[in-house]
Image (cartoon, rainbow, N blue to C red; front, side, top):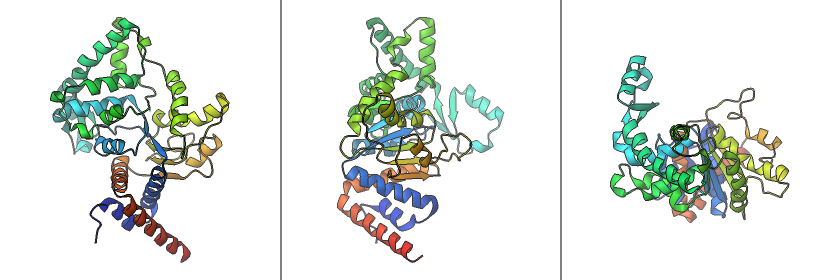
Length: 349
């Protein structure tokens, strides 16, 4: 009989035996081992995960203390906000594979910006937020303030009146992160819609570029954040996709060691969900072992690669972790039994 309080974890234990399913199960178990023993977990989120509504599972995980820091693209940052203020105006295109160029032109004329099978409404998302954010930039320019990119969004989303929420605020990961004041880096924030909007206002002379702290300053701050996060049991690295969201923060360990010449703990766990294949020089598809040679991981670091769709795998893992957090004794017993069965299977070889 299923255990009502642990249905997803039990499903994984019972069904995820081989291939990417096994990698998912083992990564999940190791994640739980780490955080249940007092360790922390840092997430790197690339792709269009906010538009795919990752917040449904990520926001409660943040509130439950299963996520302790984030590196996100500028697009994921702003799109979490868009889902909160403009959710009812999104349009879905489940048959997007069969759209023609003429179909996409009509979507453009409807002032929708398609992201695979969904679309962001220009007026209700970009332009509505612009009316709030641009005055914040102008005020910062007048007062000579300098802040990190995410700090403007933290203040904005906490100040938004509930009356203009269209999405469920409990499913907004940005709001959860802002309330928890999680450490965050947004590398390459210029590569986002609001990065472009900000550049246009700098060009027009409405505000100064200096009000946004640079990527170099992000790394300088992250030195301190990492040393705090890695206290005790250490901090793990959970990566969705590739690109700068993952490349930037994982480098903090060798940089502290070799550039600052200070002692530092290595990352205590590593898992990447990605559909990138290993190719010549592809960092997004590089195996974790390669990171050993860059002194980002060690041969003792628990390492996992799940070659699958993060929109399927990440919510499932998060839900199982939320169940474990709520029922730790039952989760520990279930995981122990699953591991024992795996050991028996290996012994039969």
